[in-house]
Amino acid sequence: MANKTRKDKKGYMLRTGECQRKDGRYSYAYTDRWKKRHVVYATSLVELRELEKQIRMDIDSGIDPNAAKVMTVNDAFDRYISRKYDLKPTTKSNYQFNYEHFVRDGFGKEKIGKIRYSDVKKFYYDLMKERGIKPRTLDGINTVLHSTFKMAVRDEIIRSNPAEGVMAEIKKSDLWVKTRKCGLTVPEQKELVAFMQDSHQFKGWVPVITVLLGTGMRIGECLGLRWEDIDLDKRLISVNHNLVDYQDRDIKKQVRKIQTTKTRAGVRMIPMIDEVYEAFITEFELQSAIGFCEEEIDGYSGFIFTTTDQKLMSRSAVNNAIHRIVRIHNEEEEKKAKAEGREPILIPQFSAHQLRHTFCTRFCENETNLKVIQSIMGHSDITTTMDIYADATPEKKQEIMANLNGKIF
Image (cartoon, rainbow, N blue to C red; front, side, top):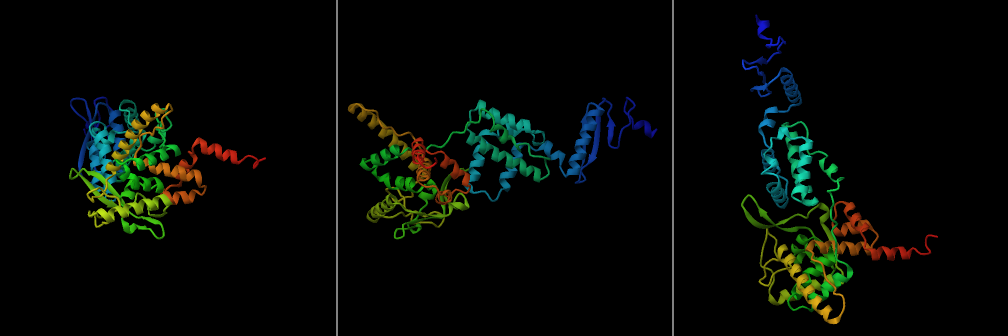
């Protein structure tokens, strides 16, 4: 009698935990490692056995199959971001921005246990094809999702990371066209500086633009400089912290903080070239007359680059000023060139970060020691330095090749 009850309607033997219901469906009951009982259902015995096999594999691997069925990608991300205690506030804000804008309302609603490699790949391709996001943005989204899935693997919610290797494949596709960061050419940067120096409206921006262009510092490193960070006698700049502006999504407010440099390599000493030294002297003399910065951030004070009311200069203010300078220069230059019957010397729109790239390009064109360039730039990875070094201007390449005449044969 007991044996009959352990067979299905087709006469197949049922294993421990298996049962066929009155409606013909099959069920399998099991107890997880937390002693909690669960039941799964299938329309056929073959399908049920596949489910059992998966459940046993999960239990043997320490995976909680039920958590993976219930938890969404959104749940996993919220869990990840709330437990990632070592993230800098700016990095956390960037992670949250990318997730909220591109993941949460669609892909994020999927159950994490159902996500496969092909699902992540399709999601990334759709973002590029349908939403037209840039490679750098997709890199940021992948960083967030890969890290989220990685924590879920470590927490034994899923067995493997479905985002593993996806970006490597996408970067081989025709859709992946990463634009190179372009610095200003020598004529463009000379035109820029000359225009600002001759402009009553923009002359006040000369010191900060000169320091950015003449040191290659990141904008946050430059704006965070204090008078105590520079030695005018030895002509040295100590880069040891970073000023950041970001949207704190927890308190829904724009905040400004002092952080450590972007990487450990970011802590460095930069010698001043003459133009940078003169820019600091000009700024010091100006502030000696009108007053020094009165603002304090996270215990830091005595900032060098300030507004007319002695407040700390912001990243957006610098970038907005650059945009206005370029726009007005080009408008005036086009009129002037037309009147003089010549081609105008126009400056492309750029950001403060491209001044860093411009400096590095000029540095690479005039220096062959990559380790020195890496040290001054604060690059943690020398491949970053090498990429810029290899991207020399056509004029510089011609000059270098011309210097080889008579030296090879």
